[in-house]
Length: 480
Picture (cartoon, rainbow, N blue to C red):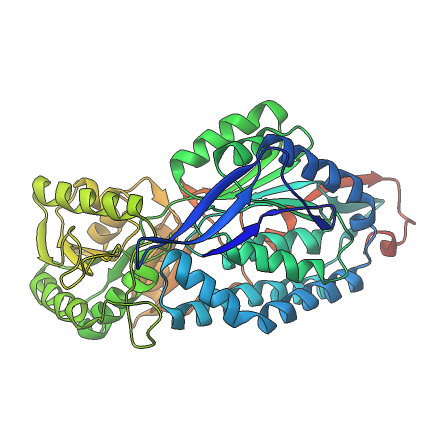
């Protein structure tokens, strides 16, 4: 057990005014691995006041200084990478090799990417006799989830720093240590005090941040239900709300590819991080004539994955992050089977060989069109197979969900991939398992949210546009 305070305001750690003590639970052991002291509405108010007071200093940072600060944070994360990775594995169960890899690499990449974007970005543009400028939106509230506890914080923090916005972060209470270490890294950088503030806590802290009238942008990553409630609660203050919500990514496998490679790789990607990624390719669509062969390949691959202690290097799948997640997945799988889905392998019970820990074996289900499990987000180590008749039927099946975050297409034909991509109402379409590019915008359509993170578009979410009519002689350096 470790015990840490999670209130960092105006450049100093402090005792909360509205104390909220909670434990982090190791999902591999079901035992507490840390005790944390968070805050509530009074602490959020103090943090926002500090951010408001710091706004002038943060806005005034020259672009070169912001680039330097982003580099300092990236370097600081790398220097403490092992400590962060160990905390991620302990608190949310990701295998240590994944925590050391994508969890750290992606986070560092956001600071490096925004440094590069900032070095080329123009905050002012002359259009005839008008200067169009972009200025920081103001104090930003950031609320982040547990499944990628550093990566999803960093994509927001890096953009806010690049834009010149002070901020208040409220991370998930399930996996809070990465946020605390990041705070220590930021405290050692040259970001002015009050430019970054941290309030650990639960619902009351998050609600206070959403509703606070001095927060001008609220960036949230999480569930659709929570996103709807946040949008409603934020509406009276007319703040900008940027949300990256759930997903149910379709992976269309066309007949011209190597079926074994496509299915094996898709199954592995859908179960990585225990399937707890909003953009996991969790729904695989295959030609009807190849359904049984695809099911056999998926089952063989699923059974070959090693489930176990996430601290061991050769483990493929660790536990899911919490009892709530474990129980929800079991219920979803059982309900799917009751509705008529065929269970190919796995299931909703605790994985064989474990008497503790939230372990669920990688599961493969065959679902008919219209079934609930083919429409909703599963968020676990589960692959849903569906059969299609032709390419247009595949697209119709892929679109038969209220989500629109990411989709995948496997084909040797770029023209066919483009045909599919043009018809998908998703914010991201990935061709042949190309790795993610975090220097470009990411975000969803439909119930998967609004706004974008990453890339120039992610930076501009944190900026307001102002037109200076008749100011044809104002130097761009006043804004760049």
